[in-house]
Amino acid sequence: MSIVTITNQNYETADFSKDDIATFLFHALEQYGDKKPDILKCLEYALSAEPGKGGLITLAEENGKIVGAVVINHTGMGGYIPENILVYIAVDPSQRGKGVGKLLMEEAIGKSSGDIALHVEPENPAKRLYERLGFTNKYLEMRLHKA
Image 1: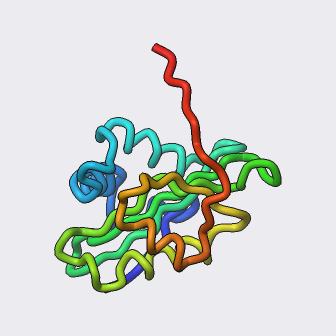
Image 2: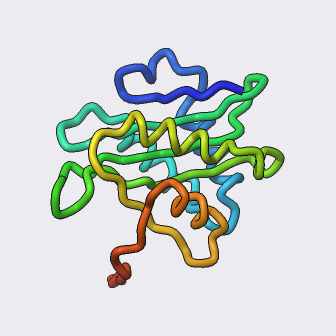
Image 3: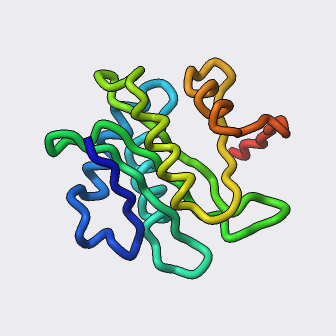
């Protein structure tokens, strides 16, 4: 298995397209995921060269197939809001429990500059991984969804 990080600077030489990555995430995220068009918007943002945008995509690949992915978007802020937000992490069901998620997270954290925030549902099994990596629960997130 190999781990690779993709940014807007090296995307043109990447082995996988945005659609490949979005399809993997859509299936592997299961009940914790979003619709594929929304995932594609996130990937576009992560790979954007526009000022205030960007991020990174870290992939685990085995035998020419994506088996894990992390997507981090830059927030364009810092200090009062972390510089980065972890939007997606997913591991192929056949690879879960083998440390792939930890490897992906360590690589993504190492390649990111600044703090990283994430949202996780309390019953999501990945919550333990985040805690072991040093993430803490400082705030209760509240959202207002306007129709």
